Length: 413
View 1 (cartoon, rainbow, N blue to C red):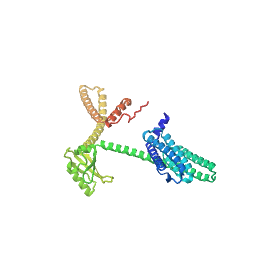
View 2 (cartoon, helix red, strand yellow):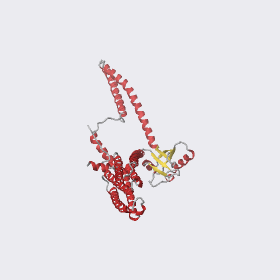
View 3 (spheres, rainbow, N blue to C red):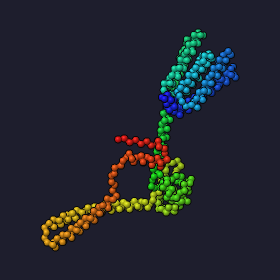
């Protein structure tokens, strides 16, 4: 279970693409070797005539192995590290045998191992790159040692093999460091793309939920983009790049005047489609197309808000006056109660009763005024989140047409 997870999930799509290109390169090399050995055996001066059969057999095996590697890389996305390791080991074995058949490092085939290790360094991960370089080094040193024992070659040739071995490690490590930097840059670019996409979605949602209309106009007066509120008040049919003058000639005239003068003055227009009176404000955008932003505010809504502010201020003033009236009323009522206790006669009692009745009447009026001023106040209420939040999430998913696994709700406590 662990190996399957590593083989499929940890190897990214970029690594799989690199592995496929690497195997395609190996397939091309194997095809060239096989074709040259089959059709043009004399094209390799490094081979003697009696070695052509060995070269052909080795090229055939190499072609079959690379073909299998290409099929596995394109058809089966599993055990990627195993596929890469097997491919590199096959290359090391085949190239070492070709070097041996061709007469050693003087044949120039050692450079092909450098290319193989460079490709493995770009595709592989972690210490596997060092393992590949170590296997190539051991194979090359073993081949040279075997040749030295069989043919009594000068021991100084080991210095040449050692330089190649050091080159194996240098190429593998350099390729791996380059691959890590490329992967880091790719991850950063991907994350920035995700952040930009999220920011775009948030901005789009904010614009869609605005009570004011927002229109993006081209310099020729065509509507490039608009939010639902602007589409509603202007009566746009939603077709591609509507002409503004067809829906609001006054607004189009104001746009032309703004383009000519560039002033920041607002324009008051009446839209024929909705009959609403709007306040339009133009502003240049920072786009490369020099588009213009048009903000449309409903004057009726603004006047209603202003009226509500006036009523709220009047309510606060009335409440303050009511408080000022209540204090002396309380004092008068208290004084009347004290005078009633003296019992000075029927006429006196009747006058006190009239005074107290009117005092209570004024008290009721003051209470009604204060109660009227409290109607717009908010009141705290306890909400059961365990019952409310799932309903909100369900409503949000239905509204946005999202799957249930997009939002995960966790409640603790």
